Image 1: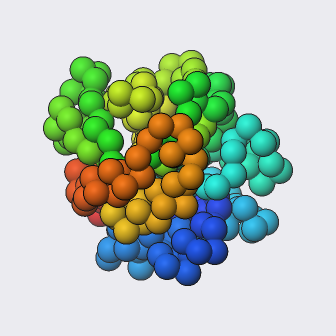
Image 2: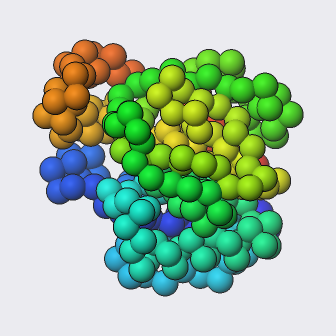
Length: 239
């Protein structure tokens, strides 16, 4: 397994202004994963690229997106079916934001707009007692910060899923679906610069809902603990 490449399932691309400044989603994961990125194959499912047969890679990461899971786009539903096939094979999977929600949707959970609206910026994540026995989550402290930007959320986890962490806004920040499948609502690949671009782009929406984007921008910082969850996952299946 460990001689195989890592698969990055790219579920979207940033708006042009963010992409020109920060690069594409695949660039964000390349930078976050460092040396491991040299052994990563990117499949842009949102652009119609075909997914390889599950099991051909050592592990897969499903990225965030500017689409919504509830839109049930053809490429998204095809990817959801692929996730189900990969789970049957016990293939290692790591979902991020949209990928987190898509995994939950694929496996029988309910996804929709968060009743309290947008969660964005650096937020505190609190781990739950179940994480103590988790092979990845047990490396995390009881509280840490992570970058977030999402309107939709996992409203109801799939049957058998284990919730490992929450934030004040969202009760499903890390979920475990099987021995080798995990996902995060937060973005372990984000830098403060990427997060700032997302906050700035939604500044008007934030103000209209009583948030102060300037305060959010001032509160952005590096989130190495959140990133370590992703890198630890990749290291587990590539070394």
